[in-house]
Length: 549
Image 1 (cartoon, helix red, strand yellow):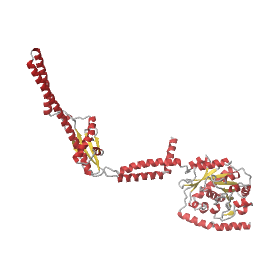
Image 2 (cartoon, rainbow, N blue to C red):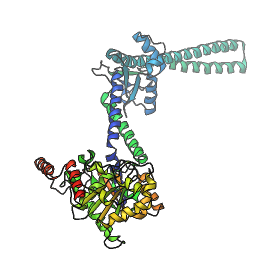
Image 3 (tube, helix red, strand yellow):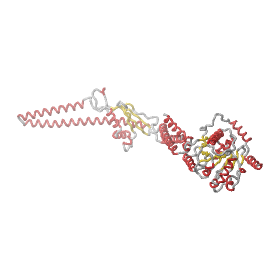
Image 4 (tube, rainbow, N blue to C red):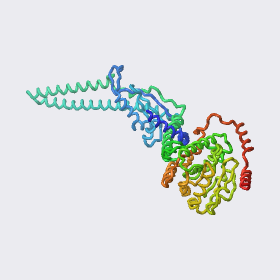
């Protein structure tokens, strides 16, 4: 039972995720059905009711009975070519083939009765009624003509038999005149037999001609068709409903096909499957500040986004404490990377650094993405010299650390973009720089290039204490995240956890119930502008500290 409920929930999740596709297919199908319906020629339906009569009956007409098979047979006769030809002649219709009339005729038998309903579908109101009535009337005439022809044929047969018997009697009498003895007696007996046959046949002929029992009319029109007031076809409502059902089926089918083919990570369940059971350390909701390229934890420290980063920071610190293996007095080195570009690794690295510094940790952010650096821009820094220059020329990193206006948070920018970033990161100088920074900080956060695009991040695997992989909802792919995990494992590393970035606001768990009102948001914005230094002030403060140092 539990498995059945889970399967049903999975189906509902797929439909909820792809409801737009289903809605589009449904809407297009309904529109197409309505357009097709209104483009069709209007057809009107006339219906006449006809009571059938058997071909022969007894003197007691009260007991008229027709078997269902006979009723069905007569219904087929009504919609026959012979009757259609009579209708065309009756209505003076220019119909080359009587089959054209039959295409628009339907005959329905009323259950357990001798009544049939003859319906005609025509583009004209009057013509629909006339055709239905004419089929009913011409069928009756056709049946009467058939009955009269059968009676005439029977009378003709009786007359021929009587004539034949008269000739035989005449011949026998003539032979008897010339015969004698026993022969004459035999001929007299033969004559009497022939006379008896003639008398019988004559009696049958007289009964056929004079008896009340005989061929009855083929039927009776109970209800004549009247010109209809509304068209029978097309039916926009019926067409729309049928198209809606077809569109819904097609939409649901396409939704399942697309969901099967689409391996975008849309929820934590898919992300866990791609990670191979590794933990998700934090779910980061989307934010307009992040979209604008700003550090959201600086701009809105009380927002749900900042709370998400504080939770991520807590999980990272506990994970580092559980896996601590280095010497006392040395800080932890943490790598933040992603499978591909555009998944938010720089946003996670910078915001995580702010969250960690606000709980009293000495934090250094190192921009090791030497191909597309972005950390300095996030903090509003404009510094020409950074990590790549230190790796190329050598020298200590401490003089090149820049403060961003927060206590215990400094940044080592990427510097100029080198032609050989992977070789620089693999050099012994990089090991020395990270060791030096770890001696002067509690946490060193290294923002690196995507794992699947270049080998830069893999060169630092043996120099870090924890690796955080960032995945973005609807952007990251299951196969890409799995490939990144495998590639890191192949070089001896391990993905310690993942940050799920850009989750929907409805899916976010960081809505405790104290959402800020618009007035509170405005006041916080004004306080942030007053308390947070501008990018220029940050650079000036950093320069003055270096000068005093």
